[in-house]
Every structure is written in C-alpha cells, then in structure tokens.
Image 1 (cartoon, rainbow over the protein chains, first blue to last red):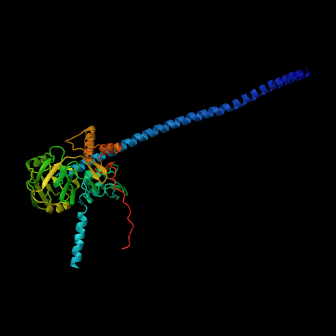
Image 2 (image 1 turned 120 degrees about the horizontal axis):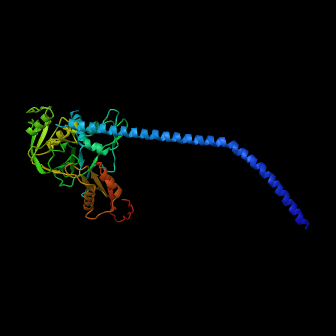
Image 3 (image 1 turned 45 degrees about the vertical axis):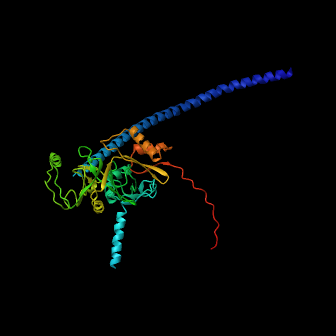
Length: 92
Length: 320
C-alpha cells in the first residue's frame, strides 16, 4: 500500500515536471523556429536564384550548341562547295 | 663505276614500280594483293597538306583517300593528323587476264603475268552523259605523243559554259591526253595520261580513263595491242586472305543505285559463294558498318577454322 502511494506521488511529480518542461521547450523551440525563418527564406531565395541561373546557363548552352551546329553545317556546306568546284576544275 | 650507277638506277626503278606492282596472291584460293590486309599504313599530314596532295603523292584516287579517311577534313587535315593509306586490294571477280577496270573503285588491275598484278587509280567518265561504258573490249591501238581533236559534243559542252576549245591540240605537254594514249575497241574511248592529275580517282572525264602521267608511262610499254579489257561494275568485292574472308565496299555508281537491302543481299550472296556455297556465321555488325559506310578498305567479316594438320611427332635428333 505504502509502495503504491509512493509510486502515485512519483508519477504526479513526474507529470508536473513534464508539464512545466513542455511549455518552456515549446517557447524555446518557437524562438528557434522564428530565428530560422529568415535563414529558410534566404535559402529559398538562393535556391530560386540558383534555379534561374541554371536555366539561364542552359539557355546559353542551347544557344551555343545551336551556333556550333550552324557553324558545323556552314563548314560542311563550304566543304561541299569546295569539293564541287574542285571536281569541276578537273573536267577536261 | 658505271655498273654501280646502273644498279642504283635499277634499284630506284624497282622501288618506284613496287608502289603499284604487287605480287599475285600466294595461295590459289586467295584474292587479296598488296600488304596483308590486317596491316595498316598511316602517314602524318603536314600543316600545308590537303588530302588531295597526299593522294597524288601516293598515287591514290581522290575519292579513295576520302573514303579511307572519313573523319579527316579533305582541305585541312591539320598538322600531325594520321592519314590512312590503302595498301591492299581485293581482286575484282573477273577472269585474271589482261586489264580489268572496276568502275566503282576507279581502279585498273593489269595482270602482267601469273605472278604479278599491277594496279592503278584512274579517273573515269562523269555521272550524267559521259559514263565510261561497261563490258569486254581490247586495246585497239597505242599512241605515243597523241594529238587531240575534240569531238563536236565536247566542243558544244565547253561552249555552253563560255569556254572555247581549240579545234585541234597538237602532241606535246599541253595536250589534254598527255604523252600516252591507248585506244579501246569501243569507239571513242581511250586510256590516257592527263595534265589534271588531281582528277585521278574521280568521275571527271568524258568517258575515257585517265592515269597519273608516271603510271601510264610505266603501263604503256607493258600493254600490247589486242590485250583484253574487261570493264566491270563491282561496288562490293569479297575475297580470302589465308583463313580470313574480307569484304571491300565502295559507293554504288549513281547510274546503278541499289537499296541497302539489295546491297546486303549482294554481300551475303558473295560471301556464301566465296565460302564454297555455305553461308558462314559472319560478324553482322561489321558487315552492316562496311555497307553503311563504304571505306574502300578490306574489312574482315569471317574467319574460318584453320585446317587442322596431324600432330607432328618430334623425331629425336640423331648425330650424323
């Protein structure tokens, strides 16, 4: 019986202690969350900016690839013209 | 001293001849001449070279060197670029006698005797109305220092482009036929030299076959009037070198186009025929690549099992 009373008292103290601790932790946590918010929004802005930069780089790469393809095609056309001229120059 | 001098001259002549004079295949069933086909020869381009220069230097055809070097720029190979020089050829499927001309490869094979085949790159007739004729004929006449009287059709063609030809070109270095010409039995067609050496190995003539001047200078005295000439159209050639079957592919002539399927069928039929009527298990990817990207270079497509010989029992060496 005595043991049961002791246990109940311990549980009650524990419950009280837990209750007090929860309140302060939440406030603390809230504080931490609040302090992280600017960092999160900065990180989010950084990510958006990186995404935009990546998109710009991709667009530049695509433009460069298109320019390279045009140059290659132009070189090929020029070679074909040279080949035709060369062949014609060898006619009797 | 005189003897040494003449020996030196002879050695020079033999070495220059060896560039095109090749031993006939050493085995009866073989049909590849030149270097063993697995041996590959490259030269290194210099800054000022074009593939055109390299072809002339090695007396190759212009289309031939381009086919053999698909990744090399004809006009600017670039200093240090390795350029492949074809050195082996599968003999065309035709009787090995006299002169055989294979139009798709723009090459002449001359069977000088049973041990020697001499091969030359030639320019042939253009695609449109100036095709080199196919068929069997013979050398009907030989002319040293020929004159040239342009036929009315050629005069008219030049005139249409604002170019007035002389009615007669006397013998000499300015004659378009060069210093040597051989008349074929087919009226109006010649084998001759040229001033336009860069056109060898291309379809540039009015139907005649043009040789490098140094080649025809060598060829002319060897050929007799009456020598048979067989002009064939074989864009795919197949032949053995020892136990390996090779295939050499050229683009089809424009006037005899063939679909990819037709070319595959031709290749398979030639392979089957070369393998004694039995279709071997061939390297399909290599066959496909050879047909899709003709290189004019023999490509190995099949290796037959080497003929097994009975094991030799070593004989003990006996002191004599």
